[in-house]
Image (tube, rainbow, N blue to C red; front, side):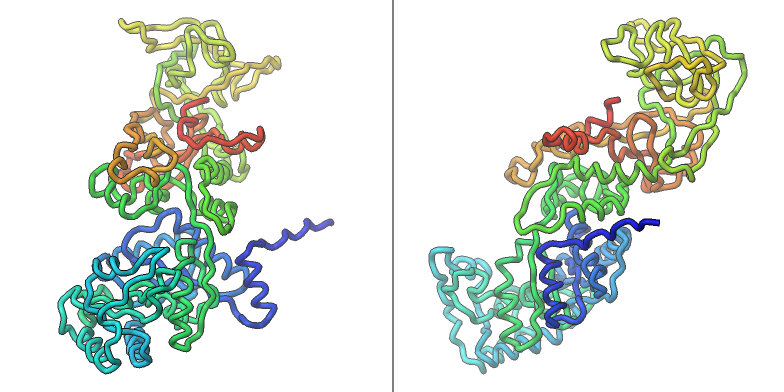
Length: 572
């Protein structure tokens, strides 16, 4: 038997460098890390960073650490530490070891004294505004601090006094002594420590000075033996400082390699603006299904496998770009098409009466649970003489190319019978509320023994057996593709007032026992998930995950750019 060809290993500028390091013997085992600050919930941008660091370690038989960069007690909390671990596991990854930057505070402080003793760091009495004002510009050098030339002895005495709590917040900082005229502003005597009399969620009241990110990050990587420190492009200009600290201390220097961050149309990942949405009540919380947080995406029904596949597909680049939302939907839809159970639900019901159905008779029709997965089996769905169908599956005066139900027209009821519309009933406003039809008993199962064909197939639920449930239909939270580009003063004006619509739907009885988080395809409508937050026993709530229409794949076939959007779920 001919074996399929082995797929070629993934190749990009990061993996190529790692292969070169391994071949040269400069690296024996690849060690990467994912180092979030526990000051908020992870979002889809973090999913790319997680996928990159963990996948690369796996591919090269290496290790990947999870490290909490917990250097700012004013913003961090154990709640976020726990949530980050949960989200990483949900994506399908497991760290080889877990660390905390706070566990390195003793070593970082000892190294700070070492730099002071070398004349490479000094205590500055300027406040944050003064330091910023004297840093200079890209075309003009900075102004040295009046305290830049303090003696080693004085700096050491002041640093120890800072560490012992002798000064109030903001009174002094410790700065590296590098070059106030350097072309890279990050090397113009960056701040290493600031005073904050706050308890730390891990170290308690042991410290009242806390390291800045640039001071803690590279040294933490070095302590852990990280070989390749993978981060997004905004840290590219910080790399010279990362290297300078390691070189000045004479410690192992990991390779920091930057890649493009993940930007997706209509999604916003700024923690500051997401916080504004949450605290302002514009969304229901950090797990609101309209947010790009991993908690929100999980609640909405996004499969973690689809997010990982999407992140791997967009790959690693050296330049930032924005991906179409429809591409993300494509990966979500592709996974759900293969795995989600099919069920029937009617979101905008109109009564369908089968006039020639035997009174009181209930038929049990067999319906496939997932045509893409024969192992998913079948289920029995009750069929009676009174049904619910979608309102837009009937038109009294159908336009051209409308193949669903209309007066005198025959259609197939999914997996049940052929029916022909005979008459309609309307209310006082002329709105159709009941459609009457006849059925062909010989077409049970959805096929005619005489071979006749019908162009339309519609779904249905038995009126006597259906139950009412809340269904939430989501659209983009913003009306513009790039909400991050909107000025802060205009930010809330681009919120989509129609980003959430709630309906009372008629659902087939098997959906009453849906498990929280369970994913379904409501046939001919969209993919939905049973809300793990608001669902109750015998009262599930369903959230629309993604529409059935794949605008991205269709555009690829036509060679035209796809348009991100959510309205495809309402078109059939």
